[in-house]
Amino acid sequence: MEGRVSPAGALSGPKSGPKVVVTGATGAVGRHVAHRLAAGGTPPTLLVRDPAKAAALGLPGAGPAVHGAAAPATVVRGDYADTDRLRAVLEGADALFVVTANPLRPRDDENLLAAARAAGVRHAVKLSWLGVADPGADDLVADWNRGAEDRLRSSGLTWTVLRIRTPMSNALAWAPSVRERGVVRAFGGAARTGCVDPRDVAEVAARALTDPAGHASATYALTGPQLLSAREQTAVLSEVLGVRIGFEELTAEEARAGWSARYGARIADALLAAARRRADGAAGGDDGTLERLLGRTPGTFAGWAADHAEPFRPACRRAPEDTPRVPSGASGPDGP
Ligand SMILES: NC(=O)c1ccc[n+]([C@@H]2O[C@H](COP(=O)([O-])OP(=O)(O)OC[C@H]3O[C@@H](n4cnc5c(N)ncnc54)[C@H](OP(=O)(O)O)[C@@H]3O)[C@@H](O)[C@H]2O)c1
Image: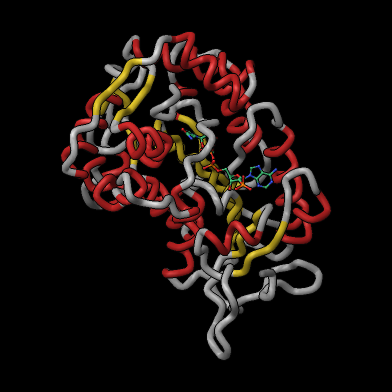
């Protein structure tokens, strides 16, 4: 699985063009960054914890090498806790895509940035949460993301921050209950949020990684073209799937209990706090940044749902890439 990494773990690949390391490549946005860079002629190095997972997700460079063909990407194993490994992987890279996901481990960002600096990386693009801009957001997840952004800005690297509110892929967390019971269950179902197609975020990330000068010192708020509530997303899903899907409102206690079982009490409290702020109208609007950067209308939730309908269909067996992810960004449809 790591056939295209040199023994030292340093980058292999073409001699020209920026060398880009992508972290979070098995995540909601990172996987599309990997594909986009590979398709755009910038074969990235993907730092993953589990190469088998990368292969199951069909990430570029994660399958068997094709004899005689240039590798579309290089998959290397690594964990944010292993600073020596990070340094070895980053040696010779020009740019780094930073995705961290555990609010209880602020050292992950610190380790990545220290390794990047030591390895001579010049530019870092970080995925963050738009909730940090909400007045009054003082929960664990907001503080963690703010701290990580600050750390990046003072890292000595040039930087770009991509803030998102809710990746549309969070709706995949609803797939089991839609498949099994024809229902979406969520807290704060009437609260609208600016969900965004992860593929659009990845497009911006890939541009910032390959054209640092054009995006240095920029903090982008990336939201899709519509503010939608969970109830409205449910209606869109019904339309796209051609079946009636019900909506059941969870109480705050039910929502917190579910999050607590999955992520622990501290993160559950933060998710609930963010959900309450969103119910109070904190989810903001779309300032047009994403459309301006893409030069086209960003993807709609209907478009995303049409491309990801299978996991919601009763007869479907969910593919690995459709596995819902932990909403550490605190804005999942089953979370705030
Ligand atoms: N999810 C949301 O609702 C949401 C909303 C707005 C903003 N955000 C922000 O987006 C960022 C990413 O959060 P997320 O939860 O959405 O990410 P994600 O898509 O779940 O991706 C997390 C990625 O990080 C990798 N990873 C985690 N710990 C690692 C470690 N110790 N070493 C190496 N790789 C590691 C994961 O690998 P594995 O596959 O091995 O776990 C995965 O590829 C956060 O700043 C979050 O606040 C998220």
